[in-house]
Length: 271
Ligand SMILES: [Zn+2]
Image (cartoon, rainbow, N blue to C red; front, side, top):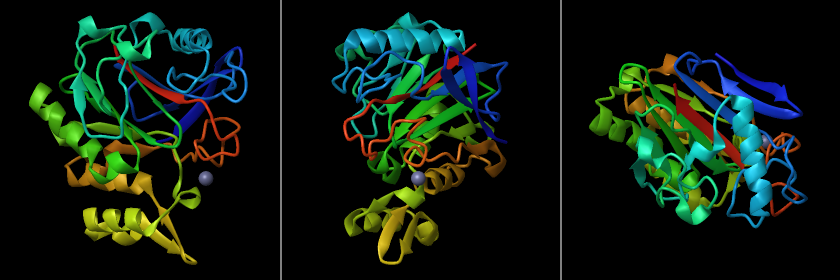
């Protein structure tokens, strides 16, 4: 199991996790190179809500989707609000949020579908993107898990919602955890640490690490643990193990010295 950052074309790069089957779905984690946005969004900013020129964002989306063999005009996205709302996308929702932020499908932090031809997209920088695939019912979910969503178990809640909507059994789910901030770079205050210790008592020392007086939060572990506790098999959970702040030349990091910055995209479309 591994994560590969591939050069696709024209300095466009896309990350993928081997665990997600390429014959059943297309997925990608974008990087920041090969786009048209000026500083501080340079250059492949995929988000409309950060103050970048919408024409640049559209060109970036068009380039990246084309490089994946997908159609940007069909992308379906959500207005992420660090909550736990999960929304189902239908084929008729293709294109929602592709060109205008207000037109996105919903205020939500996860979107699921069992329709092919609808590329689901999240935008993020440091927050954890979790991709879920049920090969039995051919259904997909993409989850935006910042610390607020993670402590409220949005990834596990999305697996449960896929059961309600599609009959997805957690033991069939394949889960991929994309590039995002790693524990080494992510320090939090005692109030946040305490919420995680209370939410994950059996794994508190793995998820909240006291390193010489600083409290480091491991969001990858917190998402992994909640998926495993929900019934996803250990062998079916893969991690990119890439920290967006350590690798901020390749990825956007909300905590990088740039301050204002662009957003990466996590994309998944069922074939
Ligand atoms: Zn780091």
